[in-house]
Length: 356
Image 1 (tube, rainbow, N blue to C red):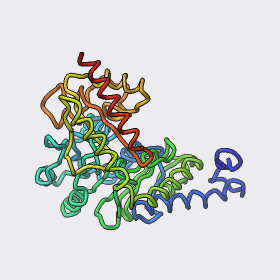
Image 2: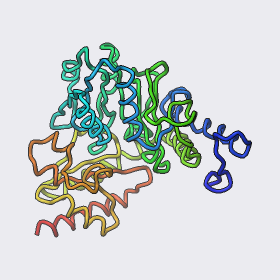
Image 3: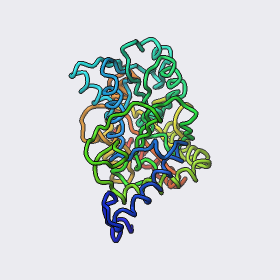
Image 4: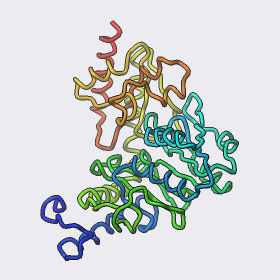
């Protein structure tokens, strides 16, 4: 709050009222670095994960102009997929790796598509719709062995899974604050030391010349504190959240007919479940749940205004209806057993109405 009210100076200014805020920013940088086991100098603050993802891919391409091939997957976040599709119009070649019916990626397939022309492999750590985990450690090892840069969208993972970036071969890693209870509008990009980099946003000398623009001190303080708290709570996160998620999931699957889990049963985040309600349109069910005060989604919140079905479920299952009949539920340590019971009852009631 002080940085939204009394401490409103510009940290890039020369006068003390603003310049002393540089130390505040650096404290937050250290807090974010500690969350993923990085050095503070490897953290660049951005406006969001979309900017972080675009910045990483752009940096790889601009610093390797002789290579024109990108590898990603068919289930990435729209900020990666849409960027790649835009790059295809500029003459880049993109390979979109498929996933199986459980949302898992084949490492053999990945190895087979990397060529001498490949400049970067951009793959998420955990899927934002199903929570399915990719073997990012092995992916990074493959990239390193082939001399290819590795970018990881770790937006869903930070604060939920232990990340020690020093033990991986990842070159770029994207984070966003609101996924671990920081304000919206602030993200971060990890750039490994000596990894080639060119800014996406040119301007002043902020962020050690890696991202121009006046720093949003309140939001940076917010992501720093949220990172500190996420790191503190991480050892208990799995044990606190997974039972809630499992109770919700089992309650739906066992009491509501024609429901089906989307994604691998075990290789996924503790907080996410994605369920198909056969014969029920996602949007119709979401409207009724919203009336009961239940917040869920039929895919990424970034695409909530789109009429398109889930590209993630479509990539996993050949049944074209499945991608229009699924709901994603995300939980946190702030949820309670009573809430999961209420949600199960509300879904049961709504499904009867919609199938009648």
